[in-house]
Image 1 (spheres, helix red, strand yellow):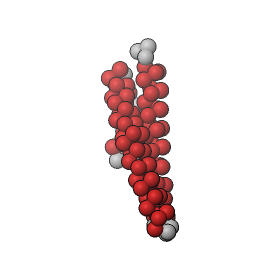
Image 2 (cartoon, rainbow, N blue to C red):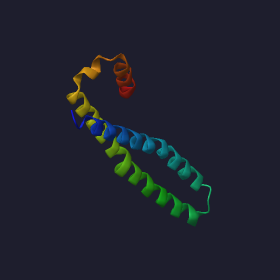
Image 3 (cartoon, rainbow, N blue to C red):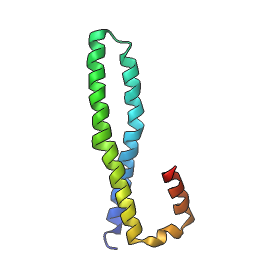
Length: 98
């Protein structure tokens, strides 16, 4: 249990980075749409750049953060299985699985 707070902190950090990625992805989609109004040369450059940015955001930040946040959450449950008895945890899990 001496590492419990470190694991909880890592869980929180990866939840925050996961949601940062989820909140930034729509902005990149908007940039894709806005690039369509540009002249052809500029449009091609921008769309290629936004595709790279979207792919990197999803594969390097968002997806690994989701996996690590889930992994640390499972590890927290293993270390402290009594968490499931709290009502707030049940509500939290309902929102996580929605």
